[in-house]
Length: 154
Image 1 (cartoon, rainbow, N blue to C red):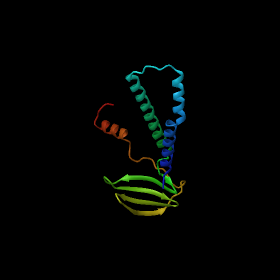
Image 2 (cartoon, rainbow, N blue to C red):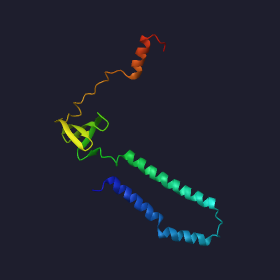
Image 3 (spheres, one colour):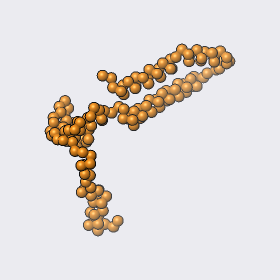
Image 4 (cartoon, one colour):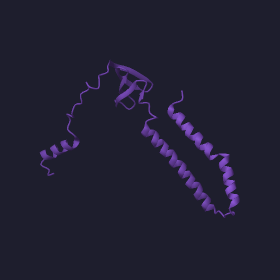
């Protein structure tokens, strides 16, 4: 199955290459050269034109990658009722992942080549989810407390 990201990339590249290699553009370039006197082109100017064209193509590719990242077309975060809520690394290659699948919330253990369901529960409603304030003070607050206890001026 070809993803939407692959289809978009393929269409952009096909359009770009068909436009650049178009016989109409080649014919128009030949006509414009016939109406103008031949110009003397130095090797430096040819190299400069080639580098400018390469720069434009690289900027176009970078812009498309940035646009795809911002539009999240390349990500599979929400697909078919599946949504990853959070993930925590518990080892170099192991993670615990909280996933919503329809009306079910799953806690999964994920390792290379292996996924284990750790817990399955009913998904809480958005209204029921209570946001708790941080009980652990921020680093700055804690640092000020330690410095004040040692008598270090602010």
